[in-house]
Length: 375
View 1 (cartoon, helix red, strand yellow):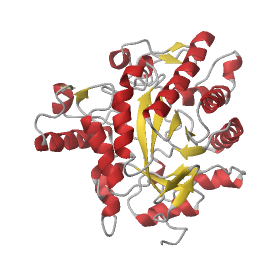
View 2 (cartoon, one colour):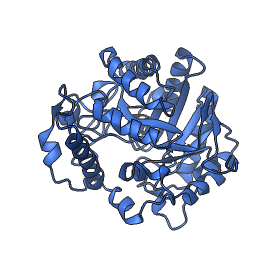
View 3 (cartoon, helix red, strand yellow):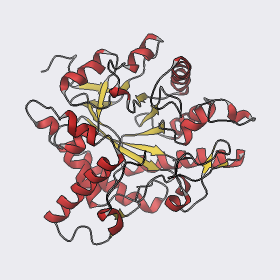
View 4 (tube, one colour):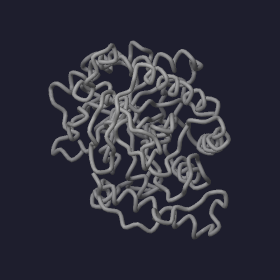
Protein backbone atom coordinates (compact mmCIF):
# COMPACT_ATOMS: atom_id res chain seq x y z
CA UNK A 1 0.00 0.00 0.00
CA UNK A 2 1.17 3.55 -0.70
CA UNK A 3 2.34 5.84 2.08
CA UNK A 4 -0.86 7.27 3.63
CA UNK A 5 0.37 10.82 2.97
CA UNK A 6 0.58 10.29 -0.79
CA UNK A 7 -1.96 11.06 -3.47
CA UNK A 8 -2.21 7.38 -4.43
CA UNK A 9 -3.24 6.17 -0.97
CA UNK A 10 -6.83 5.00 -0.35
CA UNK A 11 -8.79 7.44 1.78
CA UNK A 12 -12.14 7.83 3.51
CA UNK A 13 -14.16 10.81 2.30
CA UNK A 14 -17.27 11.06 4.45
CA UNK A 15 -19.09 7.74 3.96
CA UNK A 16 -17.14 7.03 0.76
CA UNK A 17 -14.06 4.86 0.50
CA UNK A 18 -11.90 6.17 -2.35
CA UNK A 19 -9.09 4.24 -4.02
CA UNK A 20 -6.89 7.35 -4.06
CA UNK A 21 -6.93 11.11 -3.43
CA UNK A 22 -7.33 12.19 -7.07
CA UNK A 23 -10.65 13.91 -7.82
CA UNK A 24 -11.74 14.78 -11.33
CA UNK A 25 -12.50 18.50 -11.12
CA UNK A 26 -15.91 19.72 -12.33
CA UNK A 27 -15.83 21.08 -15.88
CA UNK A 28 -18.62 22.23 -18.16
CA UNK A 29 -18.63 19.72 -21.01
CA UNK A 30 -18.66 21.86 -24.15
CA UNK A 31 -19.61 19.18 -26.63
CA UNK A 32 -21.19 20.48 -29.86
CA UNK A 33 -24.52 18.77 -29.25
CA UNK A 34 -27.87 20.48 -28.82
CA UNK A 35 -28.69 18.70 -25.58
CA UNK A 36 -29.70 19.66 -22.05
CA UNK A 37 -28.98 16.31 -20.41
CA UNK A 38 -26.23 13.65 -20.56
CA UNK A 39 -25.75 11.98 -23.93
CA UNK A 40 -23.65 8.95 -24.81
CA UNK A 41 -20.69 11.29 -25.32
CA UNK A 42 -20.96 12.76 -21.82
CA UNK A 43 -21.13 9.26 -20.37
CA UNK A 44 -18.08 8.10 -22.35
CA UNK A 45 -16.17 11.24 -21.35
CA UNK A 46 -16.62 10.74 -17.62
CA UNK A 47 -16.49 6.93 -17.58
CA UNK A 48 -13.21 7.00 -19.50
CA UNK A 49 -11.55 9.14 -16.80
CA UNK A 50 -13.09 7.11 -13.95
CA UNK A 51 -11.94 3.83 -15.49
CA UNK A 52 -8.38 5.11 -15.83
CA UNK A 53 -7.77 5.88 -12.21
CA UNK A 54 -9.47 8.84 -10.48
CA UNK A 55 -10.81 8.21 -7.01
CA UNK A 56 -13.78 10.58 -7.27
CA UNK A 57 -15.58 12.20 -10.22
CA UNK A 58 -17.31 15.57 -9.84
CA UNK A 59 -19.67 16.13 -12.79
CA UNK A 60 -19.39 19.80 -13.72
CA UNK A 61 -21.92 22.61 -13.47
CA UNK A 62 -25.44 21.28 -14.00
CA UNK A 63 -27.93 24.14 -13.86
CA UNK A 64 -30.83 23.97 -11.39
CA UNK A 65 -33.29 26.13 -13.34
CA UNK A 66 -33.52 27.28 -16.97
CA UNK A 67 -32.63 30.92 -16.30
CA UNK A 68 -29.46 29.67 -14.59
CA UNK A 69 -28.05 28.13 -17.75
CA UNK A 70 -24.67 29.71 -18.46
CA UNK A 71 -23.32 27.88 -21.52
CA UNK A 72 -24.69 26.62 -24.84
CA UNK A 73 -25.69 22.94 -24.68
CA UNK A 74 -25.09 22.77 -20.92
CA UNK A 75 -26.67 19.94 -18.89
CA UNK A 76 -29.42 20.84 -16.43
CA UNK A 77 -30.79 18.98 -13.40
CA UNK A 78 -33.99 21.00 -13.56
CA UNK A 79 -36.59 18.47 -14.68
CA UNK A 80 -37.67 14.99 -13.61
CA UNK A 81 -37.78 13.94 -17.26
CA UNK A 82 -33.97 14.08 -17.33
CA UNK A 83 -33.55 11.52 -14.54
CA UNK A 84 -33.07 8.47 -16.83
CA UNK A 85 -30.17 10.19 -18.63
CA UNK A 86 -28.52 11.28 -15.38
CA UNK A 87 -29.03 7.79 -13.93
CA UNK A 88 -27.16 6.30 -16.89
CA UNK A 89 -24.34 8.78 -16.28
CA UNK A 90 -24.12 8.05 -12.54
CA UNK A 91 -24.31 4.28 -13.07
CA UNK A 92 -21.59 4.36 -15.72
CA UNK A 93 -19.15 6.39 -13.63
CA UNK A 94 -19.81 4.45 -10.44
CA UNK A 95 -18.75 1.18 -11.92
CA UNK A 96 -15.27 2.61 -11.23
CA UNK A 97 -15.49 5.57 -8.81
CA UNK A 98 -18.10 7.50 -6.79
CA UNK A 99 -19.74 10.43 -8.60
CA UNK A 100 -20.89 13.81 -7.29
CA UNK A 101 -22.97 16.32 -9.30
CA UNK A 102 -22.07 20.01 -9.08
CA UNK A 103 -25.22 22.20 -9.01
CA UNK A 104 -25.04 25.62 -10.61
CA UNK A 105 -26.87 28.86 -11.39
CA UNK A 106 -25.05 31.33 -13.66
CA UNK A 107 -26.70 34.41 -12.17
CA UNK A 108 -25.26 37.51 -13.87
CA UNK A 109 -22.78 35.51 -15.98
CA UNK A 110 -25.10 34.54 -18.83
CA UNK A 111 -27.31 36.07 -21.51
CA UNK A 112 -30.86 35.79 -22.79
CA UNK A 113 -29.44 34.26 -25.96
CA UNK A 114 -27.95 31.37 -23.97
CA UNK A 115 -30.68 30.75 -21.39
CA UNK A 116 -33.78 32.02 -23.15
CA UNK A 117 -34.64 33.92 -19.98
CA UNK A 118 -34.03 37.25 -18.28
CA UNK A 119 -30.66 37.48 -16.53
CA UNK A 120 -30.83 37.79 -12.73
CA UNK A 121 -28.48 38.79 -9.92
CA UNK A 122 -28.61 39.77 -6.22
CA UNK A 123 -29.03 43.40 -7.28
CA UNK A 124 -29.45 45.11 -10.63
CA UNK A 125 -26.18 45.06 -12.55
CA UNK A 126 -24.81 46.14 -15.89
CA UNK A 127 -23.57 43.47 -18.27
CA UNK A 128 -20.28 42.06 -16.97
CA UNK A 129 -18.83 41.56 -20.46
CA UNK A 130 -19.91 41.40 -24.09
CA UNK A 131 -20.90 37.78 -23.47
CA UNK A 132 -23.49 38.68 -20.82
CA UNK A 133 -26.63 40.81 -20.51
CA UNK A 134 -27.60 43.33 -17.85
CA UNK A 135 -29.23 41.66 -14.86
CA UNK A 136 -32.33 42.51 -12.87
CA UNK A 137 -32.46 42.12 -9.09
CA UNK A 138 -34.15 39.03 -7.72
CA UNK A 139 -37.17 39.63 -5.48
CA UNK A 140 -37.43 37.97 -2.07
CA UNK A 141 -39.99 35.60 -3.60
CA UNK A 142 -37.57 34.81 -6.45
CA UNK A 143 -34.87 33.94 -3.93
CA UNK A 144 -37.12 31.53 -2.07
CA UNK A 145 -37.96 29.86 -5.39
CA UNK A 146 -34.24 29.67 -6.14
CA UNK A 147 -33.57 27.84 -2.87
CA UNK A 148 -36.36 25.40 -3.77
CA UNK A 149 -34.77 24.83 -7.19
CA UNK A 150 -31.43 23.89 -5.61
CA UNK A 151 -33.21 21.61 -3.15
CA UNK A 152 -35.18 19.91 -5.95
CA UNK A 153 -32.10 19.49 -8.13
CA UNK A 154 -30.19 17.89 -5.25
CA UNK A 155 -33.08 15.49 -4.69
CA UNK A 156 -32.99 14.56 -8.39
CA UNK A 157 -29.25 13.90 -8.16
CA UNK A 158 -29.90 11.59 -5.23
CA UNK A 159 -32.67 9.77 -7.10
CA UNK A 160 -30.38 9.43 -10.13
CA UNK A 161 -27.87 7.57 -7.97
CA UNK A 162 -25.14 10.16 -7.39
CA UNK A 163 -23.21 9.93 -4.13
CA UNK A 164 -23.62 13.65 -3.44
CA UNK A 165 -23.89 17.18 -4.77
CA UNK A 166 -21.53 20.14 -4.75
CA UNK A 167 -23.14 23.60 -4.65
CA UNK A 168 -21.27 26.00 -6.93
CA UNK A 169 -20.50 29.10 -4.87
CA UNK A 170 -17.54 30.46 -6.84
CA UNK A 171 -16.50 31.93 -10.22
CA UNK A 172 -18.81 34.93 -9.88
CA UNK A 173 -21.94 32.85 -10.47
CA UNK A 174 -25.15 33.52 -8.57
CA UNK A 175 -24.39 32.14 -5.11
CA UNK A 176 -20.93 33.74 -5.18
CA UNK A 177 -22.48 37.07 -6.20
CA UNK A 178 -24.72 36.89 -3.11
CA UNK A 179 -21.80 36.04 -0.80
CA UNK A 180 -19.60 38.91 -2.02
CA UNK A 181 -20.50 42.34 -0.55
CA UNK A 182 -19.01 44.00 -3.64
CA UNK A 183 -21.69 42.47 -5.90
CA UNK A 184 -24.53 42.18 -3.40
CA UNK A 185 -26.03 45.65 -3.10
CA UNK A 186 -29.30 44.61 -1.50
CA UNK A 187 -30.83 46.48 1.46
CA UNK A 188 -32.95 43.62 2.85
CA UNK A 189 -31.99 40.52 4.86
CA UNK A 190 -30.43 38.93 1.76
CA UNK A 191 -27.64 41.49 2.04
CA UNK A 192 -25.99 39.15 4.57
CA UNK A 193 -23.19 37.39 2.64
CA UNK A 194 -23.68 33.99 4.25
CA UNK A 195 -27.49 33.85 4.34
CA UNK A 196 -28.19 32.34 0.91
CA UNK A 197 -25.26 29.87 0.90
CA UNK A 198 -26.05 28.54 4.37
CA UNK A 199 -29.80 28.38 3.74
CA UNK A 200 -29.29 26.27 0.60
CA UNK A 201 -26.89 23.97 2.47
CA UNK A 202 -29.33 23.54 5.37
CA UNK A 203 -32.33 22.87 3.13
CA UNK A 204 -30.48 20.37 0.98
CA UNK A 205 -28.90 18.68 4.01
CA UNK A 206 -32.26 18.36 5.77
CA UNK A 207 -34.02 16.84 2.78
CA UNK A 208 -31.45 14.23 1.77
CA UNK A 209 -30.16 11.06 3.50
CA UNK A 210 -27.20 11.47 5.84
CA UNK A 211 -25.04 9.22 3.61
CA UNK A 212 -25.56 11.64 0.69
CA UNK A 213 -22.73 14.19 0.59
CA UNK A 214 -23.40 17.93 0.41
CA UNK A 215 -20.33 19.90 -0.64
CA UNK A 216 -19.73 23.52 -1.60
CA UNK A 217 -17.41 25.18 -4.13
CA UNK A 218 -15.86 28.04 -2.17
CA UNK A 219 -13.75 30.91 -3.50
CA UNK A 220 -10.98 32.85 -1.68
CA UNK A 221 -11.38 35.65 -4.26
CA UNK A 222 -13.89 38.43 -4.66
CA UNK A 223 -16.11 38.27 -7.75
CA UNK A 224 -14.10 41.02 -9.46
CA UNK A 225 -10.76 40.10 -7.91
CA UNK A 226 -9.26 38.52 -11.04
CA UNK A 227 -8.39 35.39 -9.01
CA UNK A 228 -6.18 37.30 -6.59
CA UNK A 229 -6.81 37.03 -2.88
CA UNK A 230 -6.48 40.03 -0.58
CA UNK A 231 -6.98 40.47 3.15
CA UNK A 232 -10.65 41.31 2.75
CA UNK A 233 -11.45 38.40 0.44
CA UNK A 234 -9.54 35.95 2.63
CA UNK A 235 -11.43 37.15 5.70
CA UNK A 236 -14.73 36.59 3.90
CA UNK A 237 -13.47 33.19 2.72
CA UNK A 238 -12.76 32.04 6.27
CA UNK A 239 -16.00 33.50 7.67
CA UNK A 240 -18.11 31.77 5.00
CA UNK A 241 -16.26 28.47 5.50
CA UNK A 242 -17.11 28.62 9.21
CA UNK A 243 -20.76 29.45 8.48
CA UNK A 244 -21.06 26.61 5.95
CA UNK A 245 -19.52 24.17 8.42
CA UNK A 246 -22.05 25.19 11.06
CA UNK A 247 -24.83 24.78 8.47
CA UNK A 248 -23.85 21.13 7.97
CA UNK A 249 -21.73 21.07 4.81
CA UNK A 250 -19.85 17.77 4.40
CA UNK A 251 -16.85 19.13 2.50
CA UNK A 252 -15.50 22.28 0.87
CA UNK A 253 -13.96 22.44 -2.61
CA UNK A 254 -11.66 25.45 -2.91
CA UNK A 255 -11.82 27.18 -6.29
CA UNK A 256 -8.37 28.47 -7.24
CA UNK A 257 -8.99 29.92 -10.72
CA UNK A 258 -5.74 31.15 -12.24
CA UNK A 259 -3.92 31.17 -8.89
CA UNK A 260 -1.49 28.52 -10.14
CA UNK A 261 0.11 31.23 -12.26
CA UNK A 262 1.55 32.85 -9.14
CA UNK A 263 5.31 32.31 -8.70
CA UNK A 264 4.75 30.74 -5.25
CA UNK A 265 1.25 29.25 -5.08
CA UNK A 266 -0.62 29.30 -1.79
CA UNK A 267 -2.45 26.25 -0.48
CA UNK A 268 -5.71 27.87 0.61
CA UNK A 269 -6.57 24.67 2.51
CA UNK A 270 -3.86 25.67 4.96
CA UNK A 271 -5.57 29.01 5.55
CA UNK A 272 -8.78 27.23 6.54
CA UNK A 273 -6.98 24.66 8.67
CA UNK A 274 -5.21 27.41 10.60
CA UNK A 275 -8.62 28.93 11.34
CA UNK A 276 -10.05 25.70 12.72
CA UNK A 277 -11.93 24.28 9.72
CA UNK A 278 -11.97 20.50 10.11
CA UNK A 279 -14.31 19.28 7.34
CA UNK A 280 -12.69 17.51 4.37
CA UNK A 281 -11.18 19.87 1.80
CA UNK A 282 -10.62 19.50 -1.95
CA UNK A 283 -8.11 21.78 -3.65
CA UNK A 284 -5.91 21.95 -6.72
CA UNK A 285 -5.79 23.55 -10.12
CA UNK A 286 -3.28 23.49 -12.93
CA UNK A 287 -1.86 20.22 -11.57
CA UNK A 288 0.40 18.39 -14.01
CA UNK A 289 2.32 15.96 -11.77
CA UNK A 290 1.97 13.87 -8.62
CA UNK A 291 4.55 16.12 -6.93
CA UNK A 292 2.32 19.15 -7.49
CA UNK A 293 -0.61 17.17 -6.06
CA UNK A 294 1.41 16.40 -2.93
CA UNK A 295 1.90 20.15 -2.36
CA UNK A 296 -1.84 20.55 -1.77
CA UNK A 297 -2.09 17.47 0.44
CA UNK A 298 0.74 18.74 2.60
CA UNK A 299 -1.03 22.10 2.70
CA UNK A 300 -4.14 20.61 4.31
CA UNK A 301 -6.30 19.22 1.48
CA UNK A 302 -7.81 15.73 1.70
CA UNK A 303 -8.29 15.35 -2.06
CA UNK A 304 -6.57 16.95 -5.04
CA UNK A 305 -8.70 18.10 -7.98
CA UNK A 306 -7.31 17.74 -11.50
CA UNK A 307 -9.26 18.90 -14.54
CA UNK A 308 -7.56 20.28 -17.62
CA UNK A 309 -4.73 17.73 -17.57
CA UNK A 310 -7.33 14.94 -17.56
CA UNK A 311 -9.15 16.62 -20.42
CA UNK A 312 -5.95 16.65 -22.43
CA UNK A 313 -4.75 13.20 -21.33
CA UNK A 314 -7.54 10.85 -20.15
CA UNK A 315 -4.88 8.25 -19.31
CA UNK A 316 -2.81 10.66 -17.20
CA UNK A 317 -3.21 8.73 -13.95
CA UNK A 318 -2.56 5.37 -15.61
CA UNK A 319 0.72 6.50 -17.20
CA UNK A 320 4.16 6.07 -15.70
CA UNK A 321 5.64 9.47 -14.93
CA UNK A 322 2.20 11.11 -14.91
CA UNK A 323 3.20 14.46 -16.30
CA UNK A 324 1.26 16.77 -18.57
CA UNK A 325 3.24 19.43 -20.38
CA UNK A 326 3.11 22.99 -19.10
CA UNK A 327 2.59 24.31 -22.65
CA UNK A 328 -0.41 22.07 -23.26
CA UNK A 329 -1.91 23.00 -19.89
CA UNK A 330 -1.50 26.70 -20.70
CA UNK A 331 -3.36 26.18 -23.96
CA UNK A 332 -6.26 24.65 -22.03
CA UNK A 333 -6.31 27.72 -19.76
CA UNK A 334 -8.04 29.76 -22.46
CA UNK A 335 -11.68 29.58 -23.54
CA UNK A 336 -10.47 28.87 -27.06
CA UNK A 337 -8.30 25.97 -25.94
CA UNK A 338 -11.00 24.40 -23.78
CA UNK A 339 -13.65 24.58 -26.48
CA UNK A 340 -11.26 23.18 -29.05
CA UNK A 341 -10.31 20.30 -26.74
CA UNK A 342 -13.94 19.31 -26.33
CA UNK A 343 -14.54 19.65 -30.08
CA UNK A 344 -11.50 17.44 -30.76
CA UNK A 345 -12.65 14.82 -28.26
CA UNK A 346 -16.11 14.84 -29.79
CA UNK A 347 -14.65 14.43 -33.28
CA UNK A 348 -12.51 11.48 -32.15
CA UNK A 349 -15.49 9.72 -30.62
CA UNK A 350 -17.76 10.29 -33.61
CA UNK A 351 -15.08 8.97 -35.95
CA UNK A 352 -15.10 5.74 -33.97
CA UNK A 353 -18.90 5.63 -34.01
CA UNK A 354 -19.93 7.83 -36.96
CA UNK A 355 -23.62 7.70 -36.19
CA UNK A 356 -23.03 9.14 -32.70
CA UNK A 357 -26.16 9.43 -30.63
CA UNK A 358 -29.01 9.56 -33.16
CA UNK A 359 -31.33 11.22 -30.64
CA UNK A 360 -29.08 14.28 -30.33
CA UNK A 361 -28.97 17.14 -32.81
CA UNK A 362 -25.50 18.47 -33.64
CA UNK A 363 -24.69 22.15 -33.19
CA UNK A 364 -22.78 22.52 -36.48
CA UNK A 365 -21.88 26.15 -35.78
CA UNK A 366 -20.29 25.22 -32.46
CA UNK A 367 -18.45 22.28 -34.02
CA UNK A 368 -16.90 24.31 -36.84
CA UNK A 369 -16.32 27.64 -35.08
CA UNK A 370 -12.82 29.01 -34.67
CA UNK A 371 -12.89 29.95 -31.01
CA UNK A 372 -11.31 33.10 -29.65
CA UNK A 373 -10.46 33.65 -26.01
CA UNK A 374 -13.55 35.47 -24.72
CA UNK A 375 -12.43 36.03 -21.14
